[in-house]
Length: 196
Ligand SMILES: C[S@@+](CC[C@H](N)C(=O)[O-])C[C@H]1O[C@@H](n2cnc3c(N)ncnc32)[C@H](O)[C@@H]1O
Image (cartoon, rainbow, N blue to C red; front, top):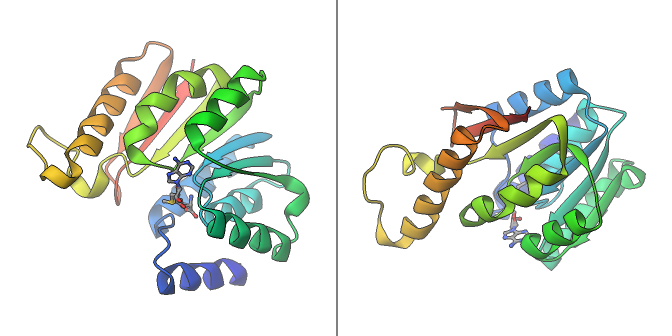
């Protein structure tokens, strides 16, 4: 879609981090195959991955969370330009608070795309697991964080807390008996977990 190319260029020019090329193909192909009806996205940015997912499955409705006010405004504009505003609920705020309140309200999803603050993935996990229906998928991007997460090396101080948190997240999803997880060593690392 031409509009997605436009968004990619906007993201590059304005230093907005968005899903990388191959990871985008993997996400899109998985959505086409799974045909989820209700997707939760953590980290909307400007709506690039949201539009990619809505394009992949015409039946799905997206709930997407973003805390940066400027990006929320841009995402809203982009969903409208793509004619998808009726298929999206954009929630502005901190993902931890929102994830807790969605879970508390009994919301259920059949697909979660986790692409927000990497150091928080492990904290979201128990809530996301409760909201995922049986057979639902948790897709997390950047789990290897430019390769720092792999192995046991001590990461640079600046990234240490985030790397350690991601290592714990990977361990948790890999050992969790309710999840069936595969980690793909592609671009910045992707984890795909299916709830049994
Ligand atoms: C990698 S970007 C998302 C990219 C988007 N999924 C895409 O591929 O088009 C991560 C986003 O998470 C947002 N974010 C960071 N911390 C957050 C938080 N605590 N709650 C909600 N969003 C947050 C950032 O502002 C950023 O826009």
